[in-house]
Length: 271
Image: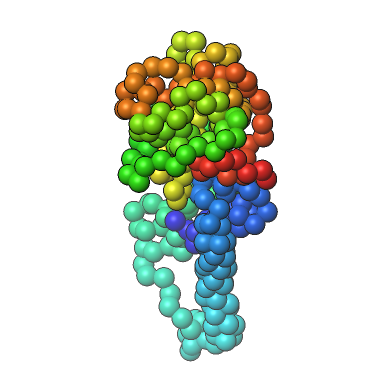
């Protein structure tokens, strides 16, 4: 690839990372918030490499102009200017002697600019129902230390992980008749039900996993809509065992804004 194209890729990639991580929240669609300093450092590094490459490409041109200027006006006894004359049969072009011109950037190389430009002008959508519908449900950890008594709050704010653990592992069956309140986004499902969903990101979008609770008793809002649902456990299987259905009979559905901790299974925080 020609040097100017390399410089362009490095500079645009650096600017794209800095724009995404410094001036927008779009980086949260790809990585966790704690990765922001690393993105900023990467953007600065790429931008610096691009500028250094541009300076290195400029220096030979300046040196060549100096040498050319120093050699002007000197001729030998035959009246020929000092320097090397082209060998017989050699032209002054940039070909390789076989009629091929390697001075141009291959057309396919320009496609490398598309993902770089997307950082500046287009942000891919956040992970949502499309991803969740194609990912297996994350297996929740087994609660080895037992379960603490549930607070008296009603309805009980609870995460999807804790609800799943209580339904399938708590032998006291404390969750059985308790009204609970959970927040997530809508993922369509077959039949007269839908999923309340959370996507968990440990480091970046590539390691995303999915948690789902099946919802009965209410029409499904539009896919990817963030909602808070209130309801009770939907009876199915034996409560407190792995056969218990991770499902909810809904008594109320409220549309809410996307929480700032949307890639965590935690009680929602507002931006």
